[in-house]
Length: 199
Image (cartoon, rainbow, N blue to C red; front, side, top):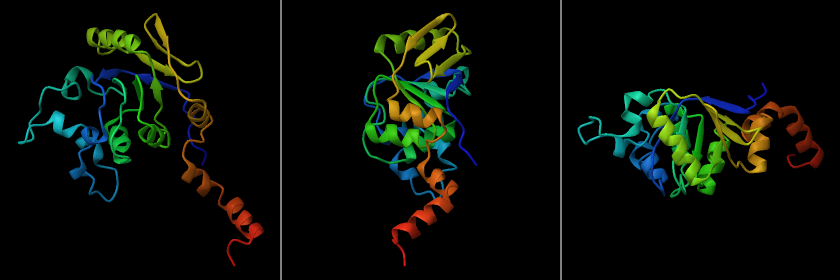
């Protein structure tokens, strides 16, 4: 089964401001004891979203106005820290399908791409302008267009950068190497026999 071609992400957005938001903030290490990633969404940004007794703290992801947002806006060096793939998995399970930030940590970027989550780099002023519009109108329709290399909202737009290899992988449906290998198992087996790697 071919993977979905990720050419556009459309929906609503939420702004989580800050720079150097690391993977431990995105998903605290104590929640990494899971067998599967399925339940990680509820723990995304847990320590900055929840009090010790489990009640909500003021946080954009707890704000009912932004419930269901699937595009995350943030600052520079998003996803820095450890290489845990639980961080993009937590964001995916929370419902995010694209992240727009000023820059990304390299491993986080790669882990997002293999989940089909585009990480788009945009200028600080463009993100701030979009965040203001989202604050004014939480139901604002935002489109991240990988083919155009732009973000669209209302009658405005701004440029984004997604490195060529990631954009190519996403837009052609080749963003999950493991799925590609499984899909082409016969060809892989034939190549192994041809190279006499396995007796």
